[in-house]
Image (tube, rainbow, N blue to C red; front, side, top):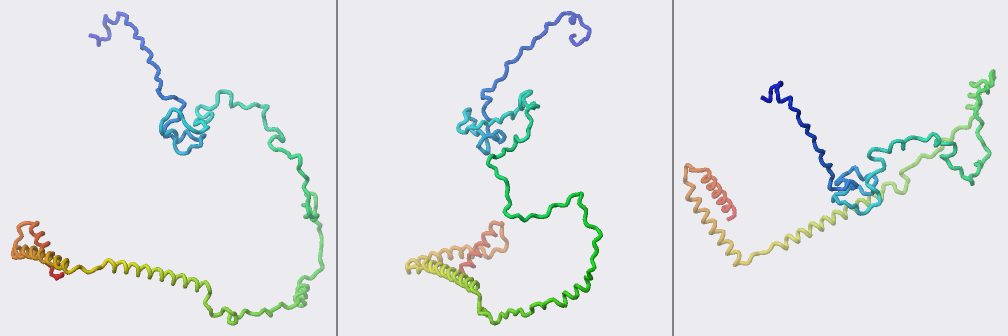
Length: 254
């Protein structure tokens, strides 16, 4: 009945339901503490790594705040506006020292000045010099080169045929190292010899009797199972193989 579009109940005015405003949520943690285990809120501090791992409300130590200036929403409206009267003026960026002295050169020799655009080179110069003849005359009259340079005779040197000192030093170092290694091996051999000792006769007899007794038990079990042509189970086959293996070891010992 209520699903019909035209109904007499639609003539009854309905009461408007006014939704009550919910209570504003307020966190129990203060808003002025840095977040725990954050790596983005300590650029202005002297603490590297992470911030506030304990989640404490009061930050101990440090004089710098974990919040940078204007790091959230920037400056307020109008604060970033430039003042046209506060521009960089001449001489404000550099300071001129009162005690500055004029530069003086130690020598009076100077390079010739750079020619100006209006200067023109001297044109039309002609020389009557014959460069071919003058070059031939200079070579004919030139003094001969000194070709009496003595060749070095390495056979007459004092250290010819002798072993260099650095090679002797290297050989000596190698020999010292070999000697140290031999001494270490000798010490190890002495320690091994000290560990070896002869058993007393009573203890040796007891040991041999115990081994023989154990061998007899193993040999008896082996003799009981050695004539089987078919193994009933895999476990029985494995035990027979182990008994035979131990018996072979005993034969090798005795």
